[in-house]
Image (tube, rainbow, N blue to C red):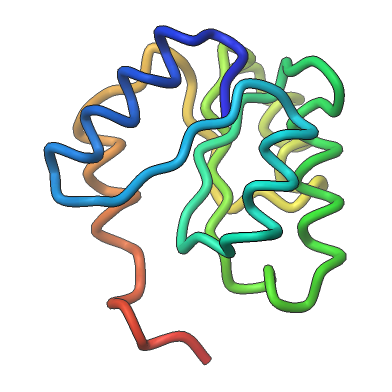
Amino acid sequence: VDDNVDAAESLAALLETMGHRTRVALDGVQGFELARRHRPDLIFLDIGLPGMNGHEVARALRQIPEMDEVVIVAVTGWGERSDLELSVRAGFDRHLTKPVDFTALEQVLAELPSPGVRG
């Protein structure tokens, strides 16, 4: 979920070349609805979004019991320590600062549980 179309589509294309299925949302409300309907394994979520910001989206998703095990990763230009703390309090599992390093992206993907292993 990113309001920057190029960033959203580039990340989706990269993930697809790595064998992952993706869906793209360009604002917070659309991202929340898409996640609620499809319950992905992983959400890359910008913080500075129109409609609902990323913190609001993460908090709202964490209120849905079925979303407990979904990994939510902040992908944002906001990289101060206080930004990381806000992300953790909002329910993000990880916080990556743009531009995202490919190695950090690979690490997040490697830490995902195998499909069908959820509790």
